[in-house]
Image 1 (cartoon, rainbow, N blue to C red):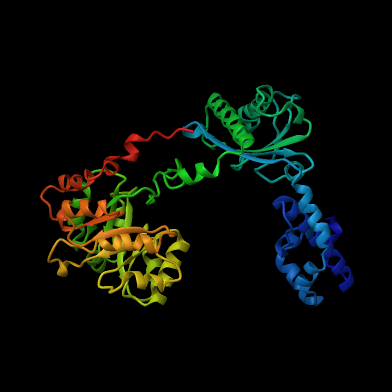
Image 2 (cartoon, rainbow, N blue to C red; image 1 turned 90 degrees about the vertical axis):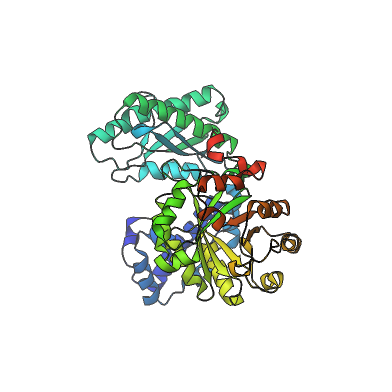
Length: 485
């Protein structure tokens, strides 16, 4: 929009004309970007008008204009045409992380047609400069850009000449050389070099100092990102396979997920934190282990005990046995704030409480478990819920442990009843290796063990007894799996 649109319109007609034109342009841009019919947004329209959203709100109120009426008045046919036209444009995305230390390179890039969304982003980036993030054309050397022309955008704020030299030197040359080599090697089709452009976002650490490493890492990352973009990497199968196995290198810890049962859940019910820490210190490292902050421990120290124990076992899956009976959402939030990966509610709670409990856990991205201790008909109880929990615990209480049977026939019934749902089944209550083996054979995903381990004179040996029960439980992902692309 031109500078005149910065001024407040004098009449309602003038305002409507200006608003409609901006809303139309915003809707067309969104339709092209998304490849489908899209309505304009108030924020996007305000941005096109170059005014604050609150200012636009005040004008709407002053001139008695309803933004919804403006949206509905736009030509659906024209917007549909814009959305359809975007489908013929190439729009590919690539990403790669290469290297180590301060010189590590992280590249995000777009490659596609000059006349499509990528071309529009290229032109906008080159025309709209931002302090500390000034885009520049990649060049192999001064006066020699590669083809397709490539816009390099610094991710980290350039604060001084030293930072600028790294971007305008090794990073710029590396990206340009990678583009040129990609064309020569056939990664980018030669017949597209005048039709396509590239937008490449580059990360340069402020403390990076080795120019040779900056060059090499950014060259490799750009080339890899291009290959991935052209191959439309990753496939959905790759994403689904790795999403719960992956560890992000910048985080320093892994977010554990229960992606391949069976698991051994160790119930830390002893209400003494130092004794509990000594137990954790003796537990062998294995991705098959879940640590449960038991109800007595939480009742004595509160959910903060989870964060304290987490310091000893950063990458371990922690479950908070809240045995929630009321205010399901509140209790989930409390445990979540203390880094719990899963929470347990009592199956005796009202369906409304359990629904709120499950909804909140899933909203926050942690597991919801329901303990069926003393629930007369667990299957019927689960049927009353809007959606099932992630984990169902078949549980015989400590005070009820009079024999070996623990209701294992319920495993099969649960599987058959909820065969279309992804539910993990845990078995708890006086579990010893013999009953654990039986439970695993009948299809249990998690065996919950307390006193047999926590009161053992040799905690590590007791844990290994359970980890040796199946070939799968003997595997340790972190020991045997090497991450490669």
